[in-house]
Each structure stands twice: as structure tokens, then as C-alpha cells.
Length: 217
Ligand SMILES: N[C@@H](CCC(=O)N[C@@H](CS)C(=O)NCC(=O)O)C(=O)O
Image 1 (tube, rainbow, N blue to C red):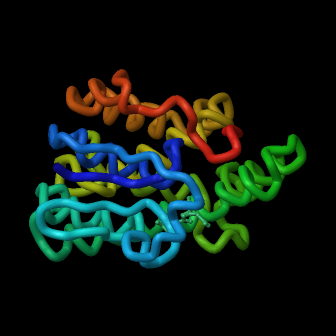
Image 2 (image 1 turned 60 degrees about the vertical axis):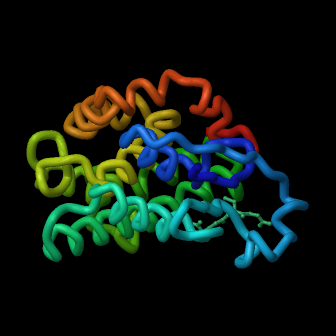
């Protein structure tokens, strides 16, 4: 059975779980602690998530795992153009993810940091600022360029799942702001959450309650 090793919160394992759940793939989640990550036989890059299945043992890096699942379960479009666009979206999510991680773990979600974050990475008026592409407006543009509620190829891909997850994280902090500025993202979030297999996962025991390592956000 597919096995996913991660710390006991959603974090960077969540898009991987969403991908598996969306395809009805049974998987075992192995919660581990930081001490266990020192076992470099399994955690060869000194980090988690780590994923194993019948083809690949102990694959590290959340985006590499996501791409593997994308290829394995046909969540990666059907052409090289689709795949390039999917990679682009997944990497755009990573740019925002790094800013989000800093807000949670470095700034510890302090009020002034939240205000600065929204101003730099959320407010539609700052889209053209020096944000290195880490801005919710760019994700909104990707969503708007899609069709039938999906970013690419008119069907579910890992790009949808990556965007859904980063959006889900941001909605926990900026629900009112996003609802006002980006109604299309709210619609997208609802659409993905309503995919039957995803809805069922989101309401299941497998969906951990704790979102981040320090319990913020
Ligand atoms: N680029 C990696 C980052 C992985 C990462 O930062 N993992 C953290 C948990 S979110 C970790 O393993 N921390 C343990 C440690 O630093 O000892 C990915 O996307 O998987």
C-alpha cells in the first residue's frame, strides 16, 4: 500500500494526500517526529514528506511526489503543453508557499505581519509590486484562464490540487479579504472541495485537524 511519512499535521503532505484521495487510492499515513527524520536510510534528504509505493521507495520532496502521482494517476493533462502549464502552476504555488511559511513560522502570524502579507501578496492593487511572482492575484489569473472549474485540460490535475491547498491555507487567515477581492477563487475552492472523492476525504478522519507545525493558521 502507498505510504506517506510526515509530521502529524497537514503541512506539505496535504497536496499529496489530496491527490491520492481524489483517485480513491488507499494509503497509509505514518506520522513521525523530527528525531525519526535523522534515519537517513528512509529520509535521505533529512526532511519529510516522504512517500513510498510499489514503484518508488522513499521518494522525497513534496512537489516531486505530487508530479509522480500526477503521472501515475493521469492527473497531469494529456499533452506536453498541458504538462508545462501544470508545472508552471505548481511552481507558482511554491513561490507563494514559501512566503506563507514565513508568515506562519517566522512572523508567527502577528497582526502587523498579516497586514504586511496581505498588502504584498494578496491585495489586487499590489500585483505589479516586487513580489517575485508570489501573489494571490497570479493564482486567480491561472484559475480564470482555466475551464470547467479546472486550471488546465478541463479535468482534475495536480495543478488544481496544489492551488486548492494553498488557497485553503490562505482562506483560514484571509477569508474576508479573499472573498471580497477574488470571488472566482472562492468558486474554484468550492468546486474542487465538491469533487466527490475530495469531499469525502475532507470529511474523513484522514484529514488531520492540525494544519501547521506550530498550530497557527
Ligand atoms: N522542499 C521540501 C521542503 C520539505 C520541508 O521543509 N520539510 C520540513 C517539514 S515541512 C521538514 O522535514 N523539517 C524537518 C527538519 O527540518 O528537521 C518539500 O517540498 O518537500
